[in-house]
Every structure is written in C-alpha cells, then in structure tokens.
Length: 303
Length: 303
Image (tube, rainbow over all chains, first blue to last red):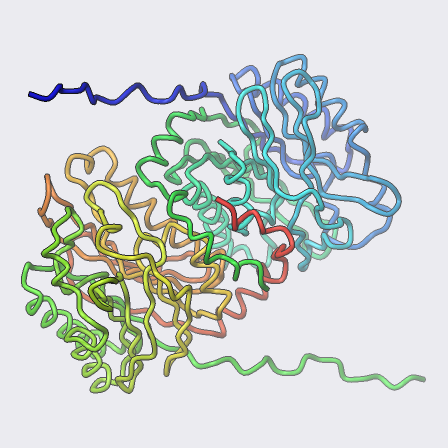
C-alpha cells in the first residue's frame, strides 16, 4: 500500500499587519497660515482617533487658485524644504504618523508642480508624487500653474504599509490606479479639489458627486486595494460664480464598499483599517492580476 | 478702427444619430434547442420594444457547463457557421437589428473559444470577438474549455453605431474597456454568466452584486461611453451546490448612471437610447482622453 502523504495546506503566507488610514476634509481660507494651522490640528485629531497614515486635501495651503490665471499665484509655490512639508514632518515625527502632504511645488523659476510629499512616521520625506494628469477646463485651469508630473507612478513603503498617491484629476484614469497597484500599493490616496459649479449644481450636482465616487470605488475593485479620497469643502469664488467644493471624502474597500465617508459640509477626519490579509483574500477570490493580457495592451500606449 | 470679426462658434460637428440598445436576460435549461427558441423570442420582443442593437447573455445556448471538467461538453462547441449564429442572423435580417450573439466557438479539434459574433442589421456577420481574459476559479473552470482570445480588442461599425464587445471576466479589467473605447466604441456590451455560490450568498451576495455593477459602471465613466451587461438567471447545479446566476443586467450611461436594469429573477428585455451627441458632450465636459499620459503607461505592459 502506498504511503499516504499529509496534503493539508501549509499555513498562509504571513500577511503584513493591518494599519489605520485617515482622511482629512477641510475648508480653506485665503490665509495660508490659517490653513496650515487647521491642517495640523486635524492631523492631531486623526492621530488621536488612531489613524497611522493620514492624507490632507490637494493644495490645502491655499484657496483653489486655479479658477483663473494670475501670475501672482505662483508665489504660493514652495520647495519640498518649505514651510508646508517641514511643519507637517514635525507633526508626523511627534505623532508617529505617516502624512500625505499635498503642496504646490516650486523647483525653480522654470518649473512648478502639483505635488504631494509622503512623510514617514519618523518625519523623513520618503519621496514626492507629482500629479501626472493635469486638467484644464473652465475654473480648473491647472495647465497654467503646473507642469505635468515627471516622476511617474509611485508606491511608498512607509512604516505602516505600502502607500500609493495620485492627485485629483488622476482619479478618472484607470491607468494611474492600475500602474500604482502593480507597484504594490495596499491603499491609494487621492488628495482632491473637486466641486460643483453653482449654475450646474441643481441639474448635475448629484450625478457628478456619484460619478466621482463610483469612478474611484471601481479602482479599488479592479485592483483589489483600498481607496481614500480627501476633498475640500466650501464655496470659493475667485472667478465667475466660483466653485462649491463638495467634500464627500471617503475610504472604500477591495469590493468598492464604503468604509467611511463624509458629507459636503463637514470638516473632520474619517478612518478605516487597511488589512493586507483581506486584500490578499480578495485577490485569491478574484485573481484578476493572474489573467491580465499584457501581450494585448499595447493599444493603451496610443492616443 | 479694426474690423470686428464674428467669432461666435460655428455649429457643432454633426453628431451621428441616436440608436436604441437592448439587453436580454434569461434563464437556461439543459436543452440547447429550447434556449435558442427562447433567445429568438426575446430578440423579437426587444425589436418590438424598439431595440436596434441587442445583446444576449454569455453562452446562452447551454447551461454554464464550466462548473466542472467534462470532455463531453466540448460537443457544445460549434463554428461561426453553425446553428446559433445562423439562426440569429436570420432574426437580425428579418427585424433589421444588430445582434451580439455569444457562442461556444469551435475552430477545429485543437481550438475552442468563448466568443461573440456581431451580426449586422442585414444578417451579415461583421466579425467575432473572442474573450481575452479567461477565468479559472472554483465553479468557473473556463481555462479548460476555452483558449484565450487571439483577435484582440475590437470595435464593430454596425448599421446603427460603433459597438464594442467584451465578455464576462473581461469586465474586471479596465485595460479591456479602455482599449475598446480607444477604438471608438459608443457602447460596450458585456455578455455575462455571473452568480452567487449558495453558501456565500447570505454573507457576500450583495457585496458581490454591487461590486460587479460598480466595476462596470465605472468603465462608462472612465471612458465616457455607454455600458450594457447581459447576465443569465437561475440556479444551475452541475457541481457542488451550483451557481445561482444573479441577473441584474443593466445599461448605464457616460456618468455611470443606471439607464435601465433588471433584478435577479426576471426574464426579459431592457432598452436605453445611446446618443453620440451626449457622449461627445460628456467628453467635452470631462476631457480625459486629451490628458492620457501615454508616455508613462509602459508599466501596464508588465505583470
């Protein structure tokens, strides 16, 4: 009689430990110092609530100045060694949290970017993501202020987990989320500044809000990872009727399910746990990555 | 005084006319002849309701035999010149409708595919799409029955509009939808066979259903086109506890909004109008295609 082998499965590969993601939603004033003070207070609140990796909204230091063209606004730009990142790095180190710190990045008089620094829990800057897809539409005239990102898609191996960062307009591009997930992101953060144009709000506002959510929830499904979007609130009028930023910041899971969310008027913090074991389970149940037809995707490199 | 030119905009480019898309949802029996008869009846119903481009569910001729491995099931396969496509081509010609006709395609004893023929309104076969992403998971053991598609992503220029076809598992891959939209699809049809495993339904059923919808609605948002999914219904037990196919067929618009949908038990037809002018308007409001970073997407060709 042949020997019967014990073929029960060996234990699962040891998953990395869970961590808590946090998202800050806030309204901005015309005063960059006030905005920084408020952001710092909300980071402390997030840390008090247990968040370990916390994201602020896009360009949180300033009003959303891209509503119109004004060369004076280039003064808002600062290097990664400037006030914004330095101040937030202090909070990161003090509270042992990772901070996704959006800032208007000035390299020199030739180049400025719409960027986010990823600050690790010891206060060191792990790296910068520069917004790759730059919009330019009525009231969102970003191509004037920002060169398109030149650092590509990135994942940052932080003290708590593998973090991807994309910024606002990037959220409509499945290529960006996929490229970031392929690099190993457990979670993709989207610092954002999106809102309603008052004249459109009644007819299209709810459609736009839901469209924005679904477009990103699906990135989490397609890539089986967590998605976290940090938007601003408040009516800011720099041109025409201005923009009513619609908040609705959220965190969603591997099945697109909402884990935490805010409405369009509340300032505050939301948190949710990111569990690498859950991500792995989801990818075993729906093993999309196994079946990607990389031999057939060259059309994606065409316009 | 300089001459003042009339700079008011010239009229919009003439948009192609709207057309009506239809989706058939049905349950299957073990009898392929019965399934074809039912499909023909539902195509006539769709035509009666004004549909001009109509899609049937994946592998509608047969039970979803991929629940387990049985070489006898290869007998279900037939060439594009077989009964399924020939019969449906007759209906297409008679009713002047375009039919998306999924069938188990046999080329010869070496190669079989999970395919869909696109039959134009004159009854001619415009071409075939062969499912590019093949699943293989418990109860969905497709890699045994189907070679992976070798014709790439396609758009079919039908009598009524530009039609893309992807099949079931393809729906989780943003690359497939994007590649199809880049070829000019007004609408992407997803013939589908997806359901609940009875033991999972209570805990995960609603999560899976919503996840399936959102994943596809977002393709419509990311690509600003219409999405139409045709699923089957009914409990089919060929292995274990079988699969309860969950229907929920739907048509959604450029903003991901549901235009028409069915529940998980109803046989029937849904229709919605596809308006190229609306698609163009949506792409002017949210001009994603303009801003794609084709210089930075080579990572998508990697595993």
